Length: 266
Image 1 (cartoon, rainbow, N blue to C red):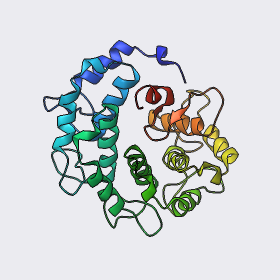
Image 2: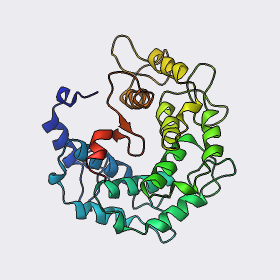
Image 3: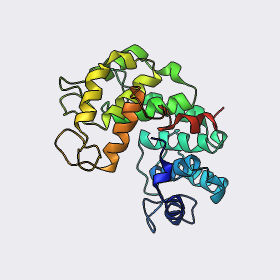
Image 4: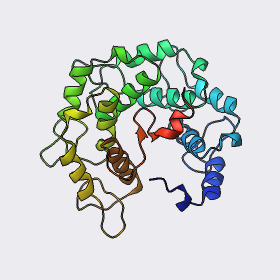
């Protein structure tokens, strides 16, 4: 929204840095164990606020490297869970730090491709059910790795377009309710694949706007529910991809302001 001035940026940065641990990674809060998801979030915040001078990038890179496995997958933390979300977090983080060379990207791509299903979608691990959240992660990771040629574009685009329900909103998989957050998970992948025109933009825009709370201004998962930061964020990102007026363009690969990414990724 172009309103970073609405936040106490020094306070934000102080909190983020308080979440970094000795292993170089970041936890979800001060004193929490390091995890790839929160490490990526921290790096995204620092990059967006032009504050990467507050970290030693190589220490963060070593944390990401420590979670890499020989089959090209990543664990989220030292406890060993493997998930394509972590593949995305790793490549996104390393790309923002200019260190994709720190891991075997071709092996990472092979693992992600092994998670592709008959419907063109992707799951958490090989053989797992296709889900829009995982599809965003896998398509985003493949885009960052320069390997979108492996995606079955039209087959996956059709599966994603079928996520739109009669109310205008999107769901994450068949037979589920619509949810504002999928305005990001689905639209981002469609945008990367140049198939965003396959859904009804007007009805989706209306669904997101109906989910906004008139008192707080926040956005909920669906109309009538209580708003939260999570759905407000992804609702705004979805509206940005839809070209809603007054919003800054967002990069569908990184889920960050496009001008920030363009100034960093050449």
